[in-house]
Amino acid sequence: MKTIYLDNNATTRVAPEAYQAMIPYFTDNYFNPSSMYEQARQTAHAIAAAREKIADGLGGVDPKAILFTACATESNNTAIVGTARGNPNRRHIITTSVEHPAVLEVCKEMERNGCRVTFLGVDNDGNLDLGEFIRALSPDTLLVSIMYANNETGVVFPIEQLARITKETDASIVFHTDATQAVGKLPIDLVGELLYVDLLSFSGHKFHAPKGIGGLFIRRGTRCRPYLIGGHQEGGRRAGTENVPYIVGLARALQLALENREQHVARIVKLRDRLEDALVNKIPCVQVNGKGAPRLPNTLNISSHYIEGEGMLYQLSEHGICASSGSACTSGSLEPSHVLRAMKVPFTAVHGSVRFSLSRYNTEEEIEKVIEVFPRIVASLRNLSPYWDAERNAPRPDAPSLNQK
Image (cartoon, rainbow, N blue to C red):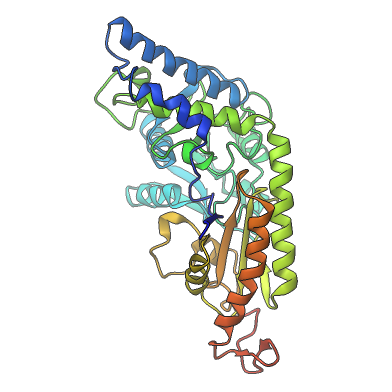
């Protein structure tokens, strides 16, 4: 059975070109870049070249502003904890209630350690209230940390506007964005429209680089103390021997993502929209979460009322279709998605969410297969629901209202 992989917001396959670029640094050029002999200097040069390529891909920033990490989780921890360590006189953090756990849980830990944290809410479409954001800014605000795009719904936040408002209010407030789902999918220009962003996190395995490599952009002059201590690497900002092959793979994967990006995005949007329109038309009582907001081009989060997401995922898997019910980092939890709860998705649908996330490797044939299979899965599960009338293909009269929170 052929695998149809539609969980690219969780991770992506490594691009063959990135894999090929990495191979020499596992075999012939395996040297520690911190060593002094000529062979090691070649691996150090490879890191420098990769840093320049990534800096160019983020709008042409200073390569020295790119810090290599193991993943976006480390990048987010470094940004938040490092900023707090570097600016001890301020203790207020602003974030949102729909962040990835790699930000949300760090902010909760900072709150336990004495910081005041404001968790901004969202509306039913997942949008932030700009008025609420502006009112949250205060004289003791240290850091704003707001994701660029939501990993579950694909909703894109107005980071350029939020960062500008922050800096116009108080230039000393540090602005961080977790751009893990945005880099490689959306244009990122840190010397243009994102000029007011101080810190930006990203992870390679979201755009066809390997797992285990990420990055953090740190704008010059931003006070952010090192998170990992014990070595001189990365200009003294992150201790530990650099992962040379993965850094090389990260740079190559980002180059590939940016080559003909508009063409790739247009094709992915066409596939996503075909899937969305077909499922909405074929399945009664469904809703697209985040439909009324700007979204990532590859993401469809759809809830089917009166059934459980786990059942749908299990049956999709039997057909070789890989999808998810939300963040891969919380997939072991039986609790409904904190993102959908923040969006006030109705009680009848909050457990019935499935996220399909596409990549440039998906095909029309794969999407047509999902369109064929998924409505049958929903129908079969609803036949087991006490709230569903199979003969009418509609909710029973005594079923909970679709609008019940």
